[in-house]
Image (tube, rainbow, N blue to C red; front, side, top):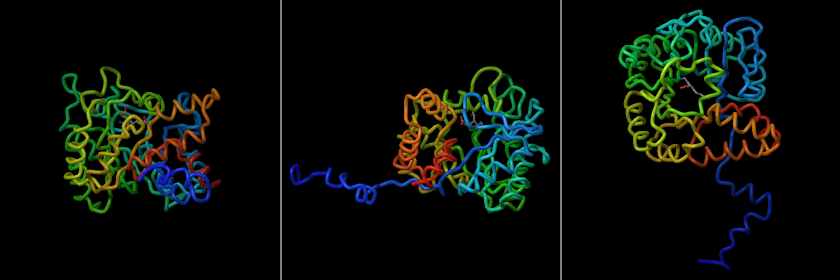
Length: 325
Ligand code: PBG
């Protein structure tokens, strides 16, 4: 069949029909909104490279949670910025740490809001790396115990799901084992399975105050040139007991999202990271792009590529736009 019998434009001319034959739909139920919780009081500090995103102290959380809940965003992803950092990142498993307290405050404010916690040490270590340093390198196996301790403390505080983002080998299995041994068999793990050593995390490191003080993360995060390795990582995490896989960043890795979706039967999340957000906001502020249209196009692109869940700093605005129709 060919033109003129085939005329794809027939289905594009009427807006009602166009909407009916739309292949991919964004739904608020798929959004996860990241939140930065900082120690201190009365802080709601805008992150310079991430307009409209803030660091919140615990007392400022309830108001934000109310807004998120009103928009019907179902889940938040928590990051903590502690006042105290040391070599091992011990604040990460402090039962009175910012994330642990934050979980309780959020759950009190809205018990139905799903609280997911980022499990990593870089925000808590004095050197800014995602694990214990030995001879200038992150020691994989010694780091696992600490990550599991952190995950357990989040579970104890009432988290609904934990999300390890450190990229140590074997961490999903270790966390699963420790959670299970403490009665948290039903607490899911969303694994940052495919996480690249990306320049797109720049603004986040300002937001989370987590830049490495020496070197970089290339010794544990993936090489952006690799795609076969994404399959290997997803295999390992699946076998270790991950419940949800993730690809991060998202925009420059749509092919990877697609590939992982095709090959695995677990739900797939993508993380639309800070640098991706910053680029859109900067261009929109300059009047160079239409923010709403660009954001919706990007988010829809993630769905088309195969993401089931979308972690995005745009989630609040996108939810509002979806509600407005
Ligand atoms: C912690 C972590 C990072 C991000 C999420 N968890 C930073 C990093 O690995 O350097 C980045 C998120 C973003 O850029 O929005 N390891």
